[in-house]
Image 1 (cartoon, one colour):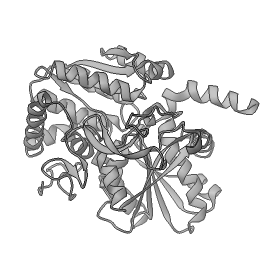
Image 2 (tube, rainbow, N blue to C red; image 1 turned 180 degrees about the horizontal axis):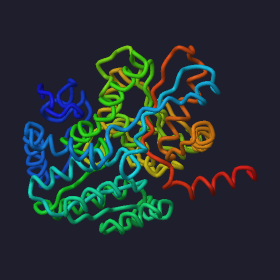
Image 3 (cartoon, rainbow, N blue to C red; image 1 turned 135 degrees about the vertical axis):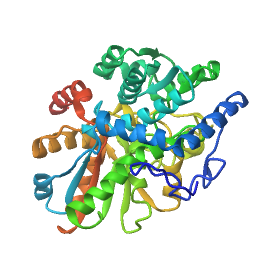
Image 4 (cartoon, rainbow, N blue to C red; image 1 turned 180 degrees about the vertical axis):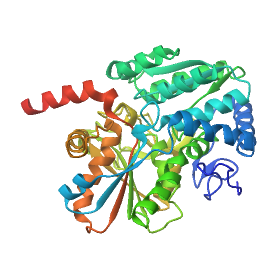
Length: 415
């Protein structure tokens, strides 16, 4: 993995991980049934071949420019910066990408790979619905059948995205098992893939799962960090002091971080879902809860997992469906262990307040997921000098969350 991609917007092989077996230090790997190993080997070989093929790279680059709407802008949040009185805040606008979130970067890359491999049927999972919408969008563009698994709880709180997927021609399959959220949707998607592994392509939405998925998703999402690094240099003449992103599975964060990981002076901060607080037990903060978060295996990879003393996966909670997940991508576990990145949390209430602050200060309504990163910026910026620079990745827009936001804001005064 020593060769850089021919595409200037995608980085491959620029980091020291993963190794050939898909490990990021002690994390990662392939913890899957033997029947899936040949499919993963086929996928890995196809991915490396695609990355080395200028025609594949050119097609993806052209689609990003003419379909996705890249490069997405970098916005200086002048009023918010003045209001907080500390660091100068710049926002990477993934909310302005086609479909409204960063998920299209990865979905488009993987869908092109599926087409290249001759797979006609795409399987996807989704929590907040944005990856499902992006997968359905890319499948419609390329003429692929698309099946999306989604927990029924998430379907209820993300109805606009469910309708968008149907409108795009995808079949949305409700998942009624377990907590009926993202974890269970991934279970069902993997079950489908095991059954139909020869004819189907599993378009995994985050930087997790068995190798090569964490690496592949990181590389397709690295467009965020590559663009942001160039844009912040052009705008300010230097690199940021801090780069912040929300972390569920971790694809938007790893995409941002990858552009800066060789820049040791740039502090990388991931923000997990604090839910109702660590003491409540109702959260999705894998790193922040010392009693429940520890190394384990979930969905084919070894990483940090919320689990009880018997190793049973814990139910999670977040106001944001996309962060409501019991594990985290293995590269994030590696970055934390190697102290290259720092991870904190924002509670539901802090995220909700951040939505309102950003909307009223800058005219930008963020997704509830992204609002966790904004909440950290609001807390941290006042503690930093006024000549310091903070970069916040706004991974998605808040259209999909308006029902939840309206309900929670109405409920708050009476509590």
